[in-house]
Image 1 (cartoon, rainbow, N blue to C red):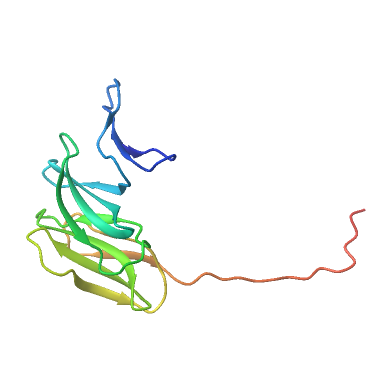
Image 2: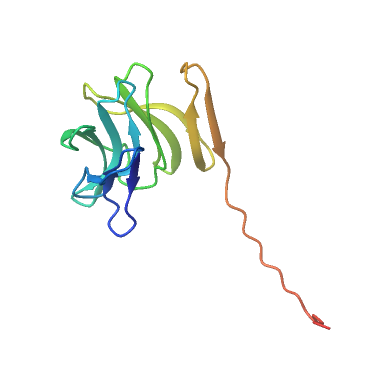
Length: 152
């Protein structure tokens, strides 16, 4: 099981059979996602106060690769591996529009998969990689004034 501590958001691993937890990161490592072959972990982190995607070794947490997010904001909420394990997909805000991006592990700039006119709350690809489910929409804020409220 992978989990984050809430005091420093570092990444830890513990066996479902029990035992002592093992720390896998020395800094932020949010929204961990295990690669299809079980050898790597993708997570969101920080580097020089900007958001990055980190690829860590599942065995010891060693950083294997680091990629800048498509946008400097830290607004993503999930990282998911592609079925073939050659890329990761994440959502973030870029130029005022929320988009889903694909980052190839071989490098290069992240590619836009899909743009949304409203906020992206969450997303997930199906196991076969053929369908994409999204939860999206804007926040609704209402103010209500209640007068002469009787508590009797």
